[in-house]
Image (cartoon, rainbow, N blue to C red; front, side):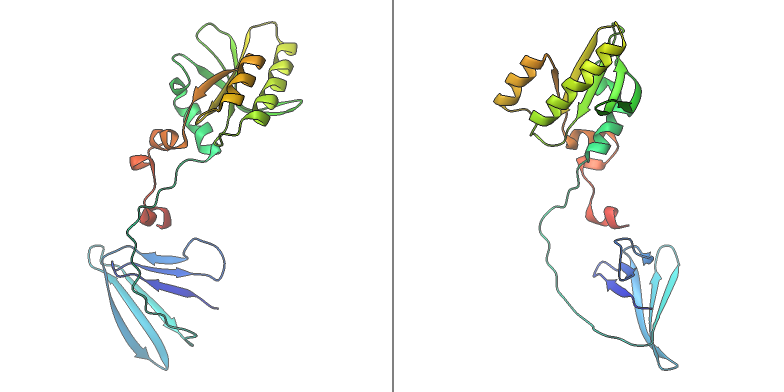
Amino acid sequence: MKRLVIIKKDGSILVHRPRGYSPVNWHPPGCFFEIQHIKDRLCIRAVHRKYKETLKIFFKKVYSILVLDIVDESEFTLYASENDMQKAILRYPEIIEPKFRPISYEKKVEPGFIDVYGIDSLNHLVVIEVKKSVRVKLPLCKLAKYLDTVKGNDGRVVRGILAAPRIGKGGLQLLNTLDIEFKQLTPRKCAEILGHEGGGIALDEFIF
């Protein structure tokens, strides 16, 4: 079996398979390393100073060794996906409006699936379409079809809300034409709600 081993200058080590992004074994920063030759095999021994754990890696054959001085002065941030935005609404419905209560998500209707389906403070039905992109023409048309379906099944008042980072002038005109409301909701805000420190995920947290 073949493995890719990465040792970083902060004392972390990762062991990867040829495929997939998750390491099959790793130690966090703070390790010291020993290189040994044991019975015709190369051995890398990583010992974590704090946790007193040891990782030993034996190599029958080494195909390549690279020593690189990598400089990274930028900040890596990973904000929420549309699925995370949906989760944020379900976990904290008040980000849509006070006393909004979700009752379903990915609700199946004839044209497709409603992202979030709920009830407002006046007991009106609320259909929410969540979009990470600012291109909203197609989502608005899709939301309008959802509203027609829900209105046809129930005599109650039905509101449509597009939750997205922002909306352009053309989208705003279409929004008014279709009688759909807009709620500004950014992926960064949703990441903060879900507990991602500072609205993003540090690179080492994402890997480990």
